[in-house]
Length: 214
Image (cartoon, rainbow, N blue to C red; front, side, top):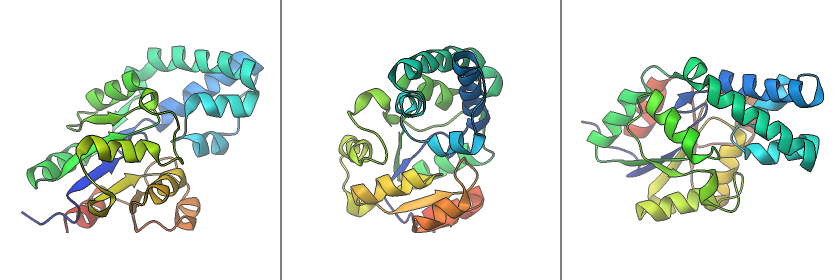
């Protein structure tokens, strides 16, 4: 067994452990069609993934329309999660291998707790959900979700890393004093991630394994 580089690893969920990007984008577009009568720019939608969903809608549409769009999103998303949620090949095994190597892992996400737990179950992920949307008063790029995750694991920033797929993940980790390993199979654009200067960028699960397990 190889020696893990960090004893504690926090993970983002959407686009990192769970292939939910199509589900999220499709849900956003449904909400926009229902509330404002047209779809939104897909690149901009993808740039919101990782941030608070309700905050994204409020920023795009204002408080009233944002609330309506959020309700439409939630209804559609819940009705289509089983159909559209997918896993990433190799990720469940990686999580099992990390646990076998003595690494403590957990998910820190801006996703609401119930759909986050559902995604973890559907994708067969053996990892606890530490922090969801309801658990903290502010969300990425604010550092508080990550700091709360470390608190729940009894860990400090010197012995942990955050793994995510977007620039907001790297920024949030830096704000918390954590290094970040970025993966490129999610929603984030490579150029945007590179600009935030993560410790490492991984294009495959095998590359991520090599960084985390040495």
